[in-house]
Length: 66
Image (cartoon, rainbow, N blue to C red; front, side, top):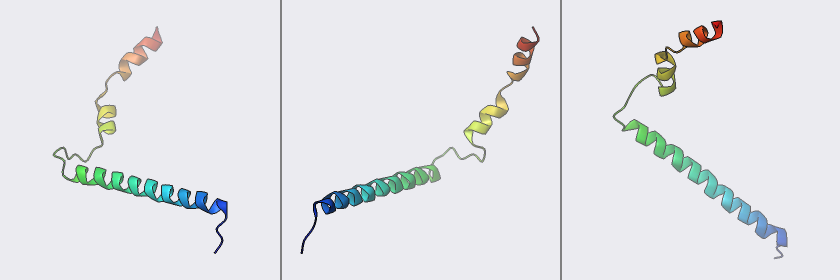
């Protein structure tokens, strides 16, 4: 059976791609499991909390009026 030289490179790419996808899946699962068992469980994401708690909008408008 003859294997041309390009086959080795293709095989290496397939192995690297499988490892990358497997790593991404494991990272995602680890993050979801960690989030499942964390004590800080809130329905509102942290970014929404920050946007709702900032009261600097009035100060910015006052600065523009000058």
